[in-house]
Image (cartoon, rainbow, N blue to C red; front, side, top):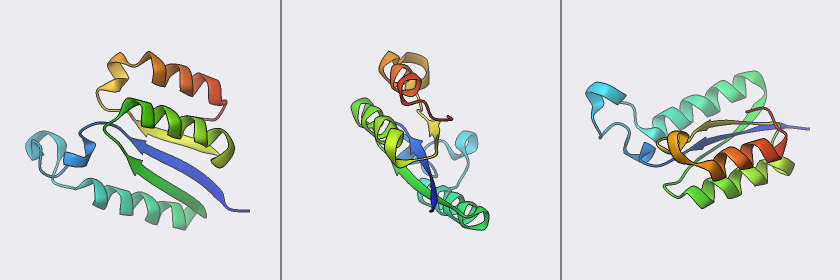
Amino acid sequence: MTVTVFVLNGPNLNMLGQREPGIYGGKTLAEIGEDCRAAGREAGIEVDFRQTNHEGILVDWIQEAADGAAGIIINPGAYSHTSVAIHDAIRAVGKPV
């Protein structure tokens, strides 16, 4: 059975490599995703790498992880400061985050 980890990325992370590269670096989100998948392959883990600019979609994906993933790695972007909904979803799924 393959172990799957969700890597979830929030708003504006799709702009990596273009938006303020002096602060955020020159790598694109696609390049970071491939790095994550490559590291996962080396460890025998399937990495499901996703990005959205929408809070509700992040909540849906976190809830999906309850049955579809062994754990979650999340960079919620600006939602890390403001989202009660994402906080509640993380607490509800009972997975390592």
